[in-house]
Amino acid sequence: MGGKGGMFYYADGIDKVLMLFGTLGCLGDALMSPLTMLILSGILDDYGGGGISFSIDVVNKYALKLLILAIGVGISAFLEGICWTRTAERQTSRLRMEYLKSVLRQEVGFFDTQVGSSINFEVISTISGDAQLIQDVMADKVL
Image (tube, rainbow, N blue to C red; front, side, top):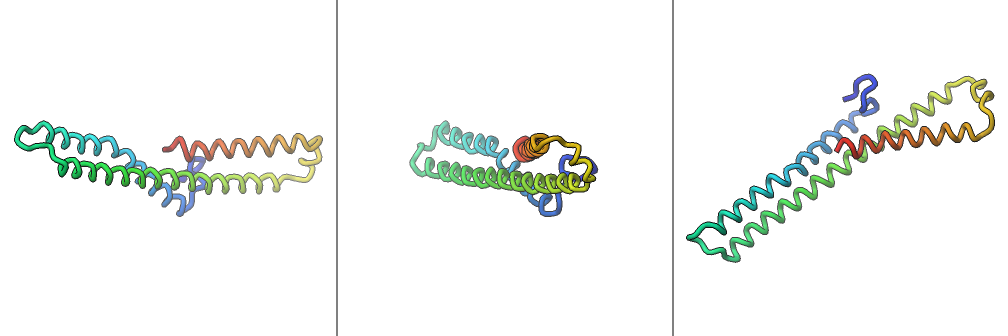
């Protein structure tokens, strides 16, 4: 995960924990379809069975199961989103700090050769845009 030049190079221990919980949330979110199909198959079995009437108790039983499933999937999706977004913000912040340190290590002559402040502004805006793009990839595309 944190290999040389890898996508998660700037991840520390807290970020790895956040990514673990985000992945667990992703798995919980992905279980929505199979579990919904399992519950709906039980409804169809009860409805299709000839001997038992389809009473309000049966409807309440399956409605409660679907409600519990919806709450669980909602919590999983929230956990997934918040953990991946937070770890992307933390890693991007570290990336920006490293870039600032590398710019400040330049010789003074490097800044003298830059004409006007528009060049400096372009460099800063380009880096900010690239950092935002990296953050979006970590937070959204990994999900």
